[in-house]
Picture 1 (cartoon, rainbow, N blue to C red):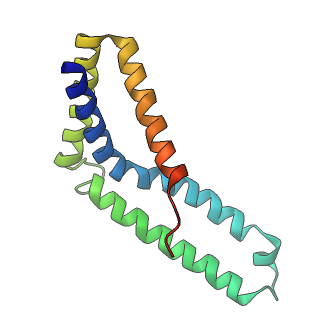
Picture 2: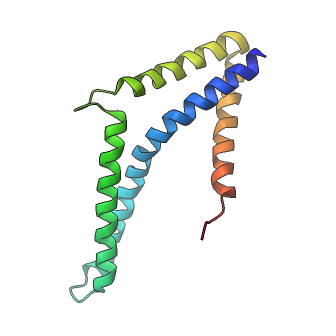
Length: 130
């Protein structure tokens, strides 16, 4: 029962953290994508496709707005972490310590690996909604 409870604690806490942190990861990728788009020959061309340039600009606007909203979820002003976010970080650390204490470091590594695999499988099996 301890193992199942600790797995549940890890899963639910990590999911809450991921709901916030994923936007920061996405921002890194979005920045790269944006630089690739504005560096393309089609974008640079003076007589380039206006609609393409509008799409790229819309992507930049979306990216900026998404990151601003993400910062609000993680930070309470400047670079100070929101208490809710800090609690989740510290809770996940405590859960990892508890797993190591009760089940061992190898089991913690297995739980982390299983969680990552499950999240990846969810993404890969998701269906497009029309």
